[in-house]
Structure formats: C-alpha cells, structure tokens
Image 1 (tube, helix red, strand yellow):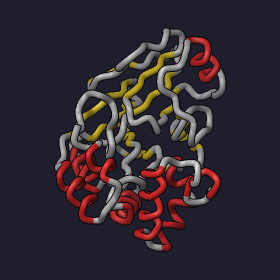
Image 2 (tube, rainbow, N blue to C red):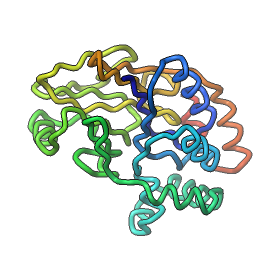
Image 3 (cartoon, rainbow, N blue to C red):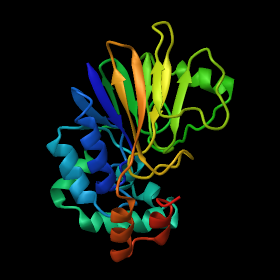
Image 4 (cartoon, rainbow, N blue to C red):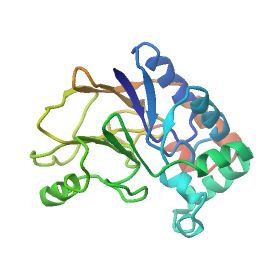
Length: 243
C-alpha cells in the first residue's frame, strides 16, 4: 500500500492541483492531510471541496483550530489573523462545519497523525529539538511512525539517532527500520519554508517497502500570487511564495 501524505495546503489551489496531478502518477491508495488546509491562501472553499471530493483523510491544523477557539485566534500574528478573518468570510457554512469538525489526532494504518508537536498538539512547533527532548517526544506515543506538519519544512527524525541541525531532508527516498520509531514532516504543499525551493512538497509512504519518498512539485506560483493581490490579502502572503 502506498499513501500520499500532504500538509499545510493553506488554501493554495494551484499548488494542490499540481500535487494531486503528481499523486495520480504514484499509484497511491489514499491521501492523508495533516491539517492547515486553510489560512494565508486565496482558495479556501475550493481547497476544502477538492480534498473532500478526493476523500482525503484530514486532521485539524492550528488554522482550523483558530476557527473554534477565539482565544487562540487573537494570539495569532496580524497577517495570519487578517487572512483567517478573510478566509472565514469566503467559506460556505458546509465547509466551515467541516473544518471545525476535524479531529485533533488520528491513528491510521498504525501511524499517528498530528499537526503540531507530538503527541497531540496543533499549535506547538517541532523544529530541531535537543537529543533529550526528542527522546522524550518519542516516548510520548506508542506508534512506530508519527507524521506531523506545522513547520512547513521537511524533517525526518529517527529514534536513537541524534537530531541534525539545519536542513535535515532533501527530496528523495528514505528507508524505515523495523526496530526504530520515526517522526516525519512532509513539508508544505501551499507555503513551503524549507530553504530548498518554492515547489509544493509532500511525501509518499510505502508501507510494504518501508520507505518514505519526499517530493517537490513545481506549480504556477504566480497564479496564487496574483489572486492574493487581487483579493487584498496581506502582501507578505504573496511575497513569501516567490523566494
């Protein structure tokens, strides 16, 4: 079985279109989203409808969480807060109910799915933990693999191995040992911040082969940038896609 794992689409339909087209060539059985399907981008309604049409299993990201938690919403940075206010007005009642109803954590095919830091946070970041902190996190959940998002970077943590500094992962194939646990971030589809390039990132999890393959997919970035500017989203949302 091969499963596509995506995260942080952030209402970027152009990026999602390119990733879904790439996924069609990969003979996957299903698609999983690690949350933040909305926020920052200009296409929240289209993205949610597309994910639901493709029967994508999704969990709740911090931007979905902000729709149901006013206290967290008011703690967000100004660009994120303004973007989410605009997003809320662009979503149908059906899509709002869907986003608000997503689960915080899901166990699927023996893997833990969470948006932020394991074992269950939607809002805490996991970038480059110390060796002791990483071991503590590994011990906080029983599953062999935990997929997470939120940082918009590719990460591959292996239990028993010291965490690396700087860029951990490049697109390519990584093998999973049967006697180790892993915490893996596929990067962001709609708003990558990985320092590699501005292509949309995702991964393929091959359960039989015991591998994950990180992928980078080029897409029409200007389609998203121009739409953000026409709709008067914060300019930073557009310029961060151009690096």
